Image (cartoon, rainbow, N blue to C red; front, top):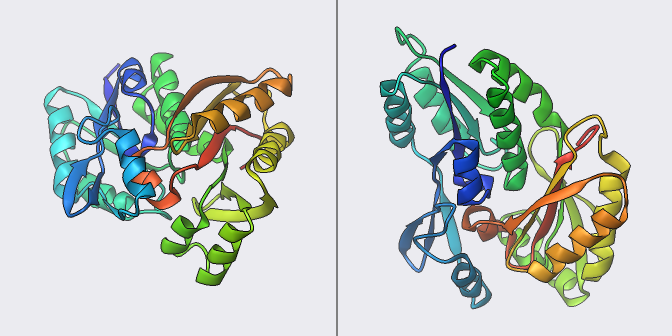
Length: 290
């Protein structure tokens, strides 16, 4: 059976160790702070993740850059030279133009004589992408072909649920998610919105409450309501430099006693963190529906 490579964006927010364990090829996005461009590697080698969040807290604005067409072409050509076909898992097209760059690059190889490129819009971000990458890697490990893996991921991606809350509504306002007045008054009143990623890969506000602990409890309840016991029982938690809240959410999920295992707690990386801000906490799991 022909080998194939799985390409992911750094918005996948997995650890570098898991990237290596899952044998994933990284197509890193970039971010800019104080006029300096950084590559978002999963080990944060160009700028430490804690330093990144400290800069955000100090008022430094971060902007992000997609993987461009040329970079995707270079990755595809590199994998082809190894004799591998390529399956690209892209950050949600509803959140970034990254998918469009990947699509244009993939189209350039549609008539290639010996190798193939498949592209999937994960309609997810952060560790939601991470769970989809995990699913793809496990399917490949079982011996599935690239076509079988592609069909499987296209189906299961709609079962990857993401629920999260943010600590500072001003970051969402800056990204066009909230009106300025709502953000200001929400921050003053300690309002914590509960958001999720919908079937089209968009960030959608679902509820709001006061206080971090109540927000985390609502998120844990969403896990209990929607998880699918027939699908993998692993749970990922991501946080914007707030390990205490991430660990509290882990405890809440484990206390549900429904067989779910939190196997990874990791940072929301700079690309997603630039838009969500410090204090973001999210949970990602396999659900009956998003």
